[in-house]
Amino acid sequence: MSFDTAVSGIKASSAELGIIGNNIANSSTTGFKTSSAEFSDVFSKSLVGGGQTAVGKGVALTGVDQEFTQGNLTSTGDGMDMAINGSGFFILSENGAISYTRAGNFQVDKEGFVVSTTGKKLQGQQATASGSLVGQVTDIVIEQNLLQPKNTDLIKFEANFDSRKPSPLVAWGGPFDAFASPATAPDPAMFNDSTSTTIFDGQGNPHVLSSYFVKTPTANQWQAFTLIDGVSQGGATTLDFQTNGQFDPVLLPVEINVTAWTPLNGSGAANGAPIQDVRVDLTGTSQLGSDFSVNRVTQDGYTAGQLHGLEVSEEGIIFARYTNGESRQLARVMLASFGSTSGLQASGDTSWIETSASGSPIVSASGSSALGLIQSGALEDSNVEITDQLVRMIIAQRNFQANAQVIQTEDAVTQTVINLR
Image (cartoon, rainbow, N blue to C red; front, top):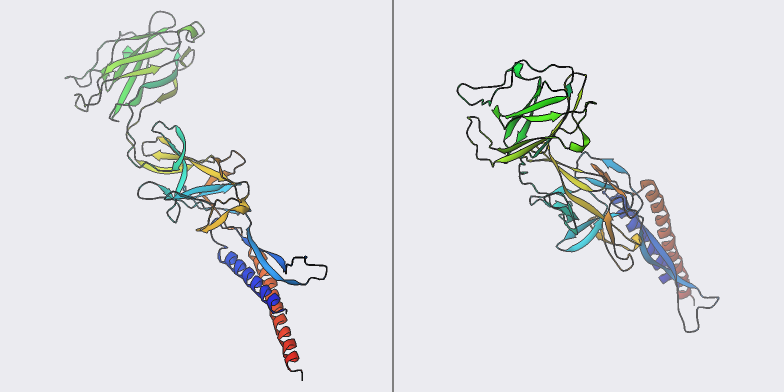
């Protein structure tokens, strides 16, 4: 009888309507992937086979296929929101249970872990204090402690000294001390040019290093004197230029070395920071017939800083920006790919888990191993196409009605047989 056949058709249509309804319900779910029903016909089996006149026994739902096509990327402006532009999945861990998702709406919890909206921890490589990435994949933690200060070790200074200037008429004096009574300082008549830059001691306190340059009566020769916070540091450093206005390459690097400097407070007393050395590298400096100009001054120290913001690069590198202007590499988000994405099993929360059909994950950085790039400040929309779903819904509804009509027809035939006298 065809009752069972029609019932299987009704069940199949109902299952398809359920799948379509789930797709439509998740049309605005971040990272959601649309599903479609897969059916196959059913035949009765016997020891001698079905034969050429075998009549089918209906239809069965053989699987639910998910379509992992790319969804549109929508900008959010939140630096911790991430979208994968291409293939790959974010890796999540919940008490050691690993799952995979395309939904990149992450945030930092109170303990510093980068987590999904459901609290699962994002996986990646953590950076050491020096910024080097560790190979092991683990929970990504954002250190929110105060960035420790760093004392200035090296200043790179590039300038041009005006070769046309005469030597000063007043000899360089000193030593000078801004905290003496009365305070002493270089007279402008003692030097040709000067410049200043801020440096930092081991506690992150700022200090002013001033360099004074004096042209000597000897051709192509200058002397440099250094003061920190108005206090002389050592004697003169002689700078000899070649006739072409450049330093002799054999003698590079040319440096001013401040040794055993004791950082002072605003009253001129030691402030408790450790004694330190400071090097001023003048390698790129020249002596040419043009006005004195400072082309570049950089130094490697900084004061303490608090976490100010986070940025994520296309390669998944999470950078921290601090209030002192410094930035640090904290971690790298790792992605996973599979030999068969259709073999993944949906586990809810817009995530999937590995199965034997999907194969083991290949974990790598974004942009490598055919993986997509990470776009920060954006999320991947659902790839559900509403128009397509509505058309499929109409077809499924007609299939349901047609199978129901088969039952009604079979019922009428059966009733006719029963009424035979």
